[in-house]
Image 1 (cartoon, rainbow, N blue to C red):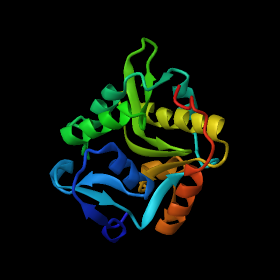
Image 2 (cartoon, rainbow, N blue to C red; image 1 turned 45 degrees about the vertical axis):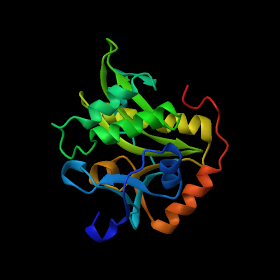
Image 3 (tube, rainbow, N blue to C red; image 1 turned 90 degrees about the vertical axis):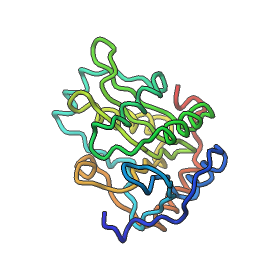
Length: 211
């Protein structure tokens, strides 16, 4: 991702859930313009978008072995997953208290969801969270306290999407990195992304997708 590929198209914050979801549906995502994700908040639309598409996930042999040691839950510890992602000791942490409140409101409204990864004792050791509508999952952040736990969360999420949404789903990771590319993340132009987004948004999805 180069600086010219990332543009803030609007600046400002609204805690209104409907307005926030309208922005997500338009292909925008929020990120602070200040240090460590601080205010003011910008709404961003990269000219090149990182996505994971059906059939694209790469699961290494070592990751498959690691997954045997984990169990998975969904929406059981949303606030704890957000807190894990917001840990200021993590490099690139950007989730401020304001962002955490916004995601909590989106979770309460049924739009934000988490995948939790647990060890054999049921302890939370990783996870991810994001925004879901139609067959779209906009991944916001992930964390791990044990090796491969965040990758395992992504594998579990893609499996849920395969099961419930067929071949029309898309996981938006916002922009690609070498780490995400190793898992099968590819890139779309902004226009390609919007086309894929709108097709996935209209896909039929089970009402119990996140049960």
